[in-house]
Length: 97
Length: 446
Image (cartoon, one colour):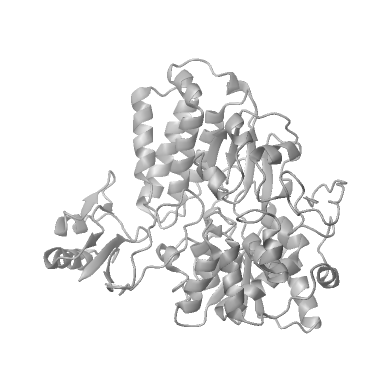
């Protein structure tokens, strides 16, 4: 299973449990908010860790989205330099958790 | 045609038959027609012809795609892709015309909506037809400019009903005036009954918006271009000889007429635009795209085309079309400090890095402007500014970081002088940009 990890920054309150459960993929920033440094994965071990981290977040801020093979890549985000966020869509997200 | 409602000036009409909106020439697309007041339906139809229902939607889709039209609200996203994503997503899409003009110095959506409401509604009807929506929401701020716009749109919608036009249902919506409340996902959230604050799902709204339905949020100017395109087809669109069509520009800062809205041809350079703002030689620097935009030094800006490829080469983007001029003698760092302080106060207060990071960035730039920062402090400021990039639900923090980076680059010589604690000639210069005071408290999101 290929998945993508993202943090909903409007929900993240910096509990930091995600970084405990999945330190390879999530680091804490200077304020203690989780920051995804390894947003994609496809091996079972990291997927299990990611799922645990997502389930452990008290705010449901860590989102693990399954990428359905053959439906295209994830839209690159965070590239716009100002102004409203660019539109795009993420293919095959399952909306976990 | 020069578009300004506040102080209409006598401007000679472009000769008939001349290519619309050539370099530096008054544009003749969106703001063509009467110089003041809202254009009535009869005059609009006499000028552009009736909006014929598209014979084949697939052809119209191809036309929009081939036009290369990109959003005029700030993001600059290809409109065809946005519409296509909504059309293909399950459920009946919602079309929202975003006329919530949050950039404090920008007036182009207001001018367009109050003067050419039928072109906006033609475009909205076209967008609805393209995605299969039966209702269009026109959303604006509650402030005076937004209210006037919605009144003009309401009157226009009434005219169209009376004329028996085959339009979608029109719904008017007015919401909070805040800076981030005009961001696309904030508007979609508000229209759905929620708060006018950006949503994390913002970048996937076309597939599934806050209401659960596919949601297309298009800037009012983008929609007007769409309407023009539906009227004239690709041939008429390409007549402007530019990849992205003409655009509306609001002049700010040190210009002849602050708040003047121009329609400029797609091949116009910033020099052409500045010429119309009363400059005959490059100013010290220009801020383009919005308050969270890009500083470009004057001589470079002068020959830079005001479109995506041209501005990207100098690290900028057209954004909402704001062009603010910094004259020689003013301090770009002091202006930036005021901008960043304002923008830091405009956070929706949802995302940690934005809430906690931006005030620190504002402190840093203020210290730099005041000559209180040294090398190490500058490095800390740069690191802090970079650390907020990509960390918000919307790109508000990204925009601030981008503004700061462009200021440090363009005003590098000034930075050195300020770091050395030397006096800045611009310290006594009166403020150039009309940056609003702190927003009123309490902040309302509904």
